[in-house]
Image (cartoon, rainbow, N blue to C red; front, side):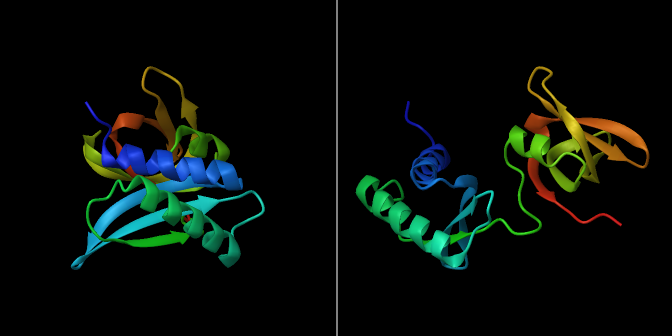
Length: 155
């Protein structure tokens, strides 16, 4: 059985990111209107500038042309993750411990699908859990339930 397109795109992006010294934060392929958009967020401890995005885009585009994993036309967009960066890996929750976060879940958990709080840690229990502090209490949310997570400003 072959790999999913999402897995292939992540692996190709990680290959280019590793060669250039960038962390690949997120890779998504979505339909926007009549076009498909391949969006890649990259990061670096010293930040990301336009030249970084251009370098990554050229290398990634050449690799995509060579491998040809997407059967239709698409637009490639490469950028920094920005202030409200997506959190897509367990390491992100460890790195941004203490920061505000918004989570959206695939299905309700504890009666809700959206959570907003401060990252209070990561638990390596079974599949992993994100520990949030919300209203003075800690809530552990199983990693497999999280559809989207991003840093968020809290009052």
